[in-house]
Amino acid sequence: MRPYPTLFILFVIICLTSTGVKAQTDQALTREIFKELIEINTTNSTGNSTEAAEAMARRLKAAGFDAKDIFVGGPDEKSGNLVATLRGSGKRKPLLLLAHLDVVEALREDWSTDPFKFEEIDGFYYARGSRDDKAMAAIFVANLIRMKKEKFTPDRDIILALTDDEESGDSNGVAWLLANHKQLIDSQYALNEGGGGQEIDGKKVLNAVQLSEKVYQSFQLEVKNRGGHSSQPRKDNAIYRLAHSLDNLAKFDFPINLNEGTKVFFERSSKLETGQLSEDMKSIITASPDPESIKRLSVYPNYNAMLRTTCVATLINGGHADNALPQTATATINCRILPGEDPVKIKETIISVLGDNSISVTEKNPAKLSPPSPLDAEVFGPIEKITTQMWNVPVVPTMSTGATDGVHLRNAGIPTYGVSGLFADITDVRAHGRDERIGVKAFYEGQEFLYQLVKELSSKTKIDRKK
Ligand SMILES: [Zn+2]
Image (tube, rainbow, N blue to C red; front, side, top):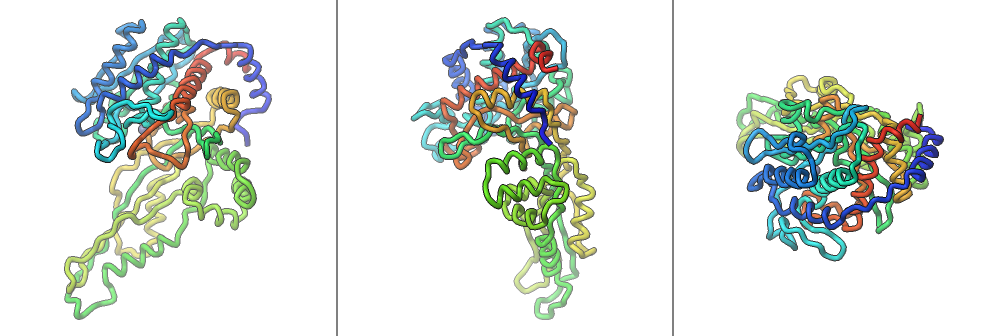
């Protein structure tokens, strides 16, 4: 099932050619903002996100934003968040642009460059946060300034939220804003990190849009035994029982369960692949998938993770001495539950698969549910149109097997789309790692993409034409 009719694409292409918006982005200003953001250390250990939030607030005020439309606040001195609003005509509920200010730790000695210095080398910007997530943060600020300069009046408020503690720490900015100032960021839907353009060998392949995230849930397994002297072993050994049960789990697969987004993912991906893999992807989205196709696709860890809930043993512990029968054996199994599936049911399934009633199974963390965002044509139409126009590659909806701040927004009833138009080679992922970087050209193209997308999503005239 396609998310929008072909006729609609034709319509939007006609709309685009008739608008002729060609205002130039001020790349020098964007670069300056990006550099400023990067050179403010926002790590959890020694950084200060309030400084970054205030720096961006100053930029927006200087560009003409009213002080009452700018908010900086957080749970403590160093965990500041910025919320700024470009006022619209209020015809529709606001659009939220979300990016996080905090970055993962980085050690100078691990890097080829200083991770907290903005460096341009051979067509790349290097620094911690250059990709995750200060590129989007800087772009959103620069684009709002551009819109302000152009005196653009959107048909809805455009709210920018730059927040703290996405990566680590216990002062998550989105959760704090939702709990304390929900009215500031309440919106119809949000754009966030989690998507992006994918390149292989310098060739652009697709523009990924994240619609959903799997739910993280770990369980602690524990077997108790009276123990004893290892010279007189008994068959009810705690380690053997745990090992036997884990083996049952290793052989088990949860049933496949595709949602609206993952179906389109496999449908689009089948066109980018060839041969058996392509055929298997086509089969998997039919009403009665070929069991052999499921088997073959499940061999790929990334496709397997898209098809079903997964639970895997990640930690194991047991015994207390070389010469004693173990009194305790424990294991952690980490589950990534499909959005929409019930963690309670998953736990019941695990207990029955383990097949040993003496093993206790307890949750190690509360599951944060995250309903998938709908494949809304109002959002996907413009994403597809601009992607086609700029790069002529397909838009592919994805489900992240990790997590972003989208989980908080989706839980609060704000559908969230991970979309950036920032392209990078899929074999060269450096976010969270050493020498993090973003292509200079990719950065400004992403800026233009997000500018056009936000404008499109907040211009009533174009939406009217669609009807
Ligand atoms: Zn991030």
